[in-house]
Each structure stands twice: as structure tokens, then as C-alpha cells.
Length: 101
Image 1 (cartoon, helix red, strand yellow):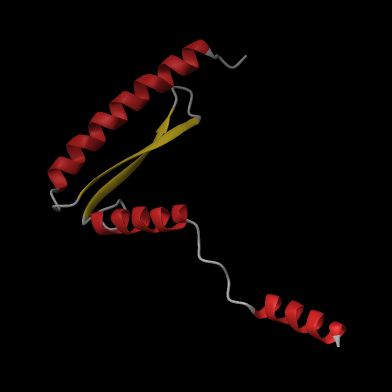
Image 2 (tube, helix red, strand yellow):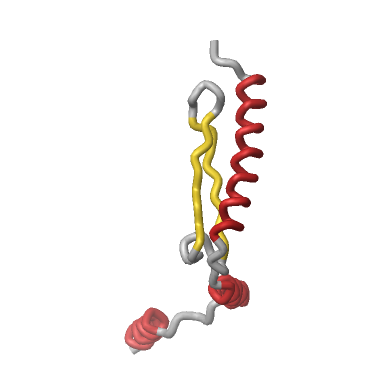
């Protein structure tokens, strides 16, 4: 009789509903929803450009991207040119400090 009660108690413990998620789970969901509501990312922007940057001797250094949610292609081009110039200067400084021998 006691074995039956213990087995039933164990079985009920195994099929009991899962505990409620911790509060931080709800906070994470709220953050994800907030990011989704912002809507405009590189992937969804109507105007976007990317460029690969190479150092002075031709090794890949990095990639820059620019996008605009309003679809303003000229603004995207200006932003991309600015970022390209900045990263090319960084690539030149890096190569000067780390020459390949």
C-alpha cells in the first residue's frame, strides 16, 4: 500500500506542469519585442550598401555597411564613403605598425 502511494506521488511529480519561467525570461521577451518593433535593420532597409576594405598590400581588413530606412540612396552613399575612408585609414595604420616580412 505504501509502495503504491509513493509510486503515485512520484508519477504525479513527473507529469506535473513545468514551473513558471523566471522573471528574467519575461524581461528578455520584452527586449526582443522592443527590438522587433524598431523594424529597420540592414536586412530590411530599402537603401543599403556594403564595401570590403583591404589594407595597402591587398589583404582583407574588414567590411563596412551603411543603410537608410527612408530609402535615401544618396545619404547611404555618403555614409558609406565616410566609413570606407575611416576604415582605410585604420587599415593603413595597422599595416604600417605590423609589416609583413
